[in-house]
Length: 334
Image (cartoon, rainbow, N blue to C red; front, side):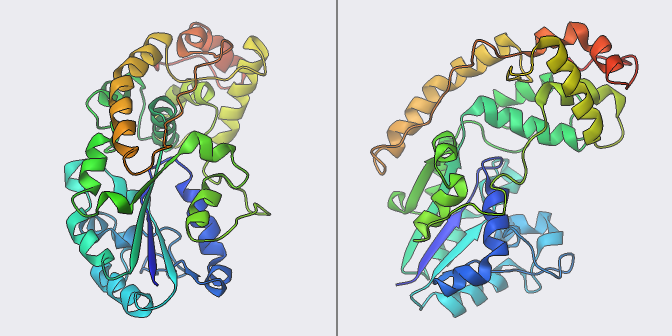
C-alpha cells in the first residue's frame, strides 16, 4: 500500500531540521521503503532540501525552487514512480501552509493529486503563538526585513504575520477543502521538542522510521538571542545583522541582568494581550482537532518569573550597545 506523507509546516516548527535530515539520508530512507524526493531546479542543480517546488500555484512565486517540468510535472513523476508501490513518499515544505490569499496553495488540486496514493497523511506542527510570532520576527529582523517589533504585533491580531496565519482555524478550514478530516494529523511543537527525536522523530515515526539524533543537529535554523538582536537593529539598517555583534550585545545583557534569564522581544502587556487574544481560538481549534485526535492539545507554557522583557532592557540600550563596542544608539527600536 502506497502512503503519501505531506508535511506542511508550520514555519519555525523544525521544518528545516526535518528537511536537512531527510535530504541528507534520502538513500538510507529509500532502503527502508521511505522516499524523500531529491528535486532539482536551475538555481539548485545539486538538489533542493525542501519540496517548495511542489506547491503548485505558489511555486511560481519561488522560481528558484521550480523543478524543470513545473510542480505538476514533478508530482506526475512521483506518482508514476511510487503511487502503485508499497513505498511511503515523504514531502516536506512549510510553504504549503502559507495563509495570505495570493500565496495560498490550491488545496483542492493538491487533494486530487494526493488521491493517487492508497493512504494520505497531512502533517501540521502547531506552535503556541507567542513563541511562534517571536521566531518569525527574529527571522525577519535577522535578514533586514523588519526594523521594528510593534508593527508585527499589530499584524498578529489581523491573523497575517508575514503572510502566515496565527489563528489556525482558517488553516484547518483550508486543508479541509482538499483533504478529509481523517487524513489530517497535528503535532504540538512544544511536546514534540521534549521527545528524544524532536520534531524530526515525530515526522519519521509516521513513516515507520525510528530516528536517533546523531551527528546532524536537530535544530539547524535556531534563532539568535531575541533582545540582543533587537538592540542591534538600529546599527545595521541596510544589511543582515552580523552574528558577532549580536553575541557581543547578548553578553552585555547577561552581564547586567543575569546569565540564566530567558528573554523575549515582547513587553508584558503585549504578552498578556496575545495570550488573551488566542485563548478562545485555540480552545475552539483543539476541540475540532480532538474529533480526529482525541488526545491532542496545544501546550501554552507560562512565562517564567525570571523572564526579561523588552521594557526591562530598552532603558539601558545605549549603555549595553556601547559596552559591546558598537557605539551610541542612533535610533529607537521600540
